Amino acid sequence: MSESDLKYLNAETDVSFCLFCKTNDVVLGGYKKDKFVGFGQAKYSGLISLTKNQQISLFEKEKVKIPTSKILQKDKITQYSPVYPFTVEMPNTVFSEWWTAAFESIPYETIHFCFKPDERKSMIKATKRLFNQLSAIQLMESGSKISTALVDNSKHIENELFYKWNSFTVSDICIIASELEKAQMYLTGNVDLKETPLIKPVTQMRNPTVERESDFNSLLTRIISYDRYISAKSVWSILEGEVKLQANERKFDQYNILKRIIADELFWESRYGNSGTQKFSSLNTTVSRVKKKLKAA
Image 1 (cartoon, rainbow, N blue to C red):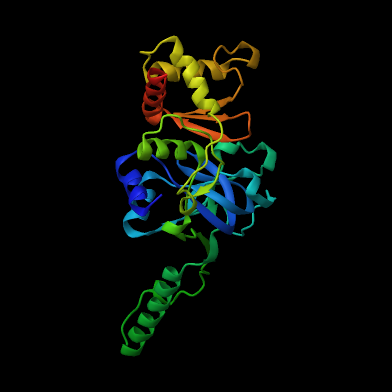
Image 2 (cartoon, rainbow, N blue to C red):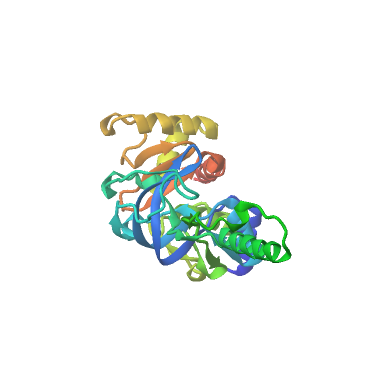
């Protein structure tokens, strides 16, 4: 896959890329009313998600700085501890709360994280305090009256938490299996898409191998076979209904690959251990591809 291919996929399609993150200290958590809640601290080396804006910025500037993201490989998390590792009280500039949570209780699909924040005194406040002291000295030397606030040294500057931003470049870009399928379709028009390993660095994707048909594609094929004119919205409704049913009650999901739907994103896991997601916003493209395959059959 050439650099021009990557730029095309970024600019003209809904293909999403991710990043490979080298070993870092992180804080796992989630969001409550747009405020970050910490669950525990750990080390992580693996894939992390990119927002669309971050992806665009990365391709345009060849570098992006990220303070928070989502973990895509739970098994790459190590040295987890639910203990709050800072002396700064909450709520603070980073955490609204801290929920001491066992690792097993954290829902995989919603593991957000931030790189472990720096705990230190604010340089801005320290500089402002020094400036006030120097100003007070100058006023006293000139005989002018000064505010007591300028010479009050009793207030101690407390430690605060500051987000840590990590930089990533184009060479860190990777792609997960479900997005690679879409990329292959856009670049080659090949409708006979196959499952691939979860991690594929873009520098190793020039001749992606194909082995077997995606279980998720097979599921969509079974649904669409009942109605070749079905809309993507109706397909989504069927998928939502299947998720709510027990394994032995499902009509189309014969391999029980559907796991859950959170907001507008569906999570599935194939018989072969490959995990994938399908967003409602991009389902129309996926459905169109399956219909094209059925029409050609």
